[in-house]
Amino acid sequence: MTFRAFHGCREDEKLNGNTFSVDFSGEFVSTAGNTDCLEDTVNYGKVYELVASVMGGERCNLLETLASRIMEEVRTAFPQFLHIKVSVGKKNPPVAGPCEWSRITTEWNRDE
Image (cartoon, rainbow, N blue to C red; front, top):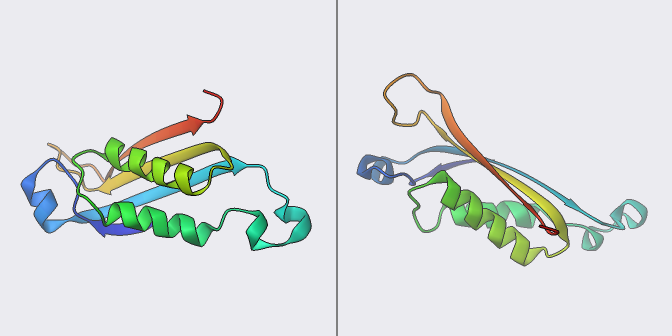
């Protein structure tokens, strides 16, 4: 998923925005393989809406904060997840040298 958003520690990042990418994956038990019904699985359109809401919502200084907020929103909406992995990247981060992306990844397991 790709978004134009206004997150970062520097004021120019919050004012001018940047391109962010979000990769989401999750593991859950579902009967949808047998029923072919959307009601029996996770609605990925809804997952996208939740991610978009976080990315367009309250500004964050850190990618870690964005990833944590995304994870919490999805966990709350879809308690059937057993494992969630979220990666958030920022294009051309403001560092002292060439860098296409900065990216963090966080994971959650129900059993931990």
